[in-house]
Length: 243
Image (cartoon, rainbow, N blue to C red; front, side, top):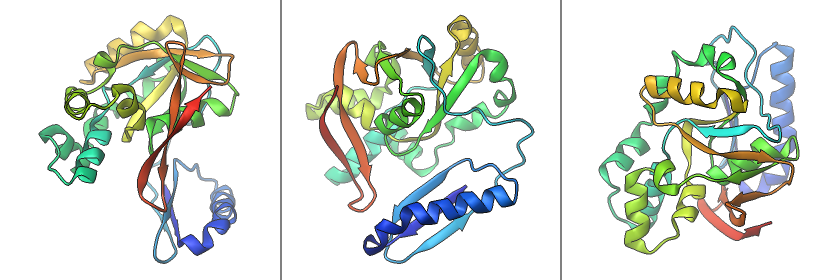
């Protein structure tokens, strides 16, 4: 894992620094799990070698017609962020999540068998759920038709906060950041097997939708807003609808 930080005055150098990290990884025959780019008062490159991976990592891949499953309910990241912006204490589960996102540790024992459970593509939810979906889909120029009940895929604390503040639950959902909670692209014939295995691991997985030929992300056919994390202002930005 590599964390790169540059001051705003050097933001144009990001691509060349990232490419240098990629070249170094190739030279040492290493896989890069994640490169995180940040804004800082000075520059830095942090490298952490996490583990030896005995099998080829699951790539970002999204074939039209395949199902998309989220490994656990989400929303705690957005709940913690919104609470911070408002200057109020986050709800208990969001506070625990923000301090130590350990729910995904339950995936460790299951990880070696994910390919046998039909998983063909995957990504974690790093900056926002919207950005994770875009990164997952753009490589194959595909889209996503989200057909999940928000009450089933969102944590109860995030739903309660949205109702209290009069926020659109969909905006809260796609703006959440859930480090280490993966999104899986799954062969449709394996969806029930994967969900059952994730539940046995102690998670609450949910079917999210289907990969489509259209390069757009919609919620039951309606375009959703672009929601992005701005590293330089350290804020979440909501933009116009993505068609």
